[in-house]
Image 1: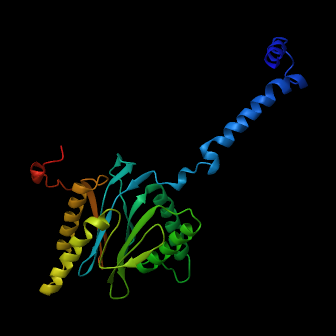
Image 2 (image 1 turned 120 degrees about the horizontal axis):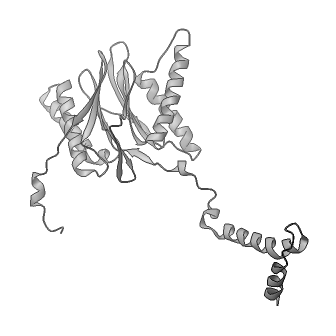
Image 3 (image 1 turned 60 degrees about the vertical axis):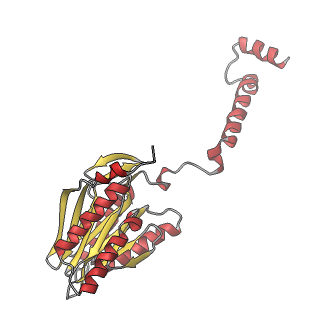
Length: 275
């Protein structure tokens, strides 16, 4: 009966501002929309926040102390999920003559943090006497910023490696901090999947030098970085064959771009049983 009445009234072409039209047409529709909104899965968790998850990400960063400074390496690929989306993107940055950083994780968050770092650096230059970041102070500042954002449940999805020389004697400094604000210093560090794949290689190299009472030169350190990038390229889906190396010592910071590795694929023919 209601359906017949509803069709009959609809054929009368009632004015849309009439009470009868609103009762018959708008209220049922509004209730239906409200029902859909209440039963939609997203309504239980609030609005969708795309910033809560990384979009375009960089993979591992590897760094190592040598006699007079620090060498740091990272590939130049940004991945959209597992898709190799952007190539030739630098993930190393020179802060000043004695400080260098490398970053893994979400590149958008890294770009935002670049603005914060530049603003803080400008503020320090306006002080009397003028100041600037060194590796130690930048590492401490990044730890505070990342921990603050993590505590508000909106972290920066990044892992930073801070390298430089500090003090009047230009002593090498190397530290890392992750998205939770957890930080430490060491003679070698690796972020991302590199922390599982290449840290043992670096530790073995340093232990061998210690047993032989020999020093680790800049050239040897850069060769170790090449080996690490090669291992990551062979074993990490998100790694890339093109990489760059940054070196910081008492002479200053230098970034060597557009370096490549080819990988060792000869042993692939001996892998059987996975067809």
